[in-house]
Figure (cartoon, rainbow, N blue to C red):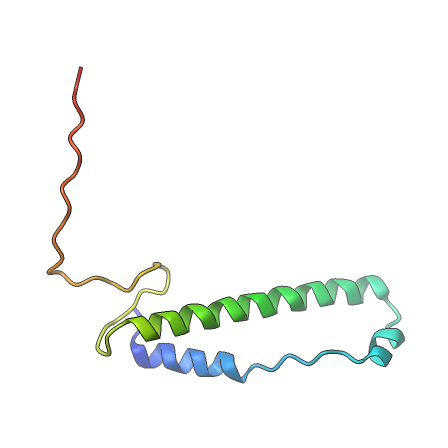
Length: 94
């Protein structure tokens, strides 16, 4: 369970991450092209992960009430206990 304050702190930490693009000279001076290519691929992957986390946290924070705890693994905030359960379908036995 994650509280709203913890989510806001995590979002602030993610917003502070800065990605620096290498200059053309730095790319040219790289001696091991394969290693640099692999490193750039990992950097792109990390950028994508950070961007997805930012979007998910901002969406959760904007749609949910103030005093609610969240489970970050689920897609929706945790529902209250007063929710009405839907009826399960009854399958006909033959």
